[in-house]
Length: 311
Image 1 (spheres, rainbow, N blue to C red):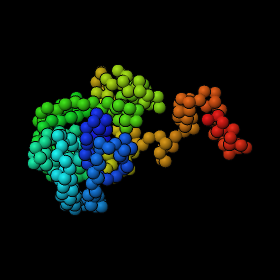
Image 2: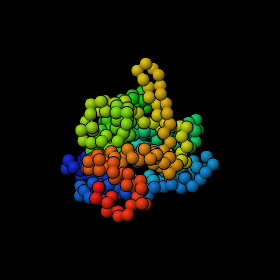
Image 3: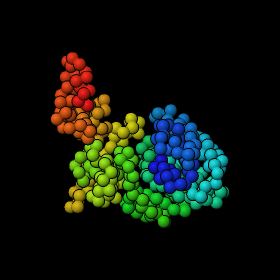
Image 4: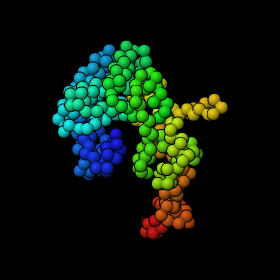
């Protein structure tokens, strides 16, 4: 949603960006006079409970009520928009509140589908839990209330059309407009890994963003919430990858945290390769080799200026 806001703003559109408090926003949003940012406190009482599904469900309903009031109040206070664009998830109560406000203010309501909210609840309660089935039904009904839909893959578009009976679902591929955006685009990174066999700093060069092979592969990347993943595990530490080949075979693997994490330290060879890939963009290869040799023996360097001179 941040990049939607940025893209609209650079094209002269005024944007009211509403989201939960948390990580700091990038400067291209906070410094843009066309973007007005509205931060909502995230209701998280349900996360204080471990073990009891009943109490978790009650507190989740209470959190949803508090969020509804905060979101509805903000949507009614901002200047009347031409379009209300909502990212899903979170589905509850966002879709219902947005729909009500859109109808009250007579504006078009569009949902940007990134995933399915009920599947995230299923990680905690199980897919057959009554609360999960209710959440799925509410998400489907909320989706049907929208005027149009965006999603990032043909597969997801078919799912929304066939399972949720949604119409006017447009596939808007997650095509990053800059190297920075590409680094945070899972479809781009996954497609580049398949096409090139690796992802490095040069993967995010401007010409690679438009590479026909990567662009074509991005359309085949589908992200889902894995039902078997631990919902309490730290962020970015769990992932399962499945690649379906033309001959019908499927290749699967787990990626539990990137190299460089405390519990998965990078090897000396991996560190050296990453350093050289970065350094050789600005200094000659021989100087980069000498610099990394000195870095490995830095405790014995008599004068640190010998190292900085190479850099």
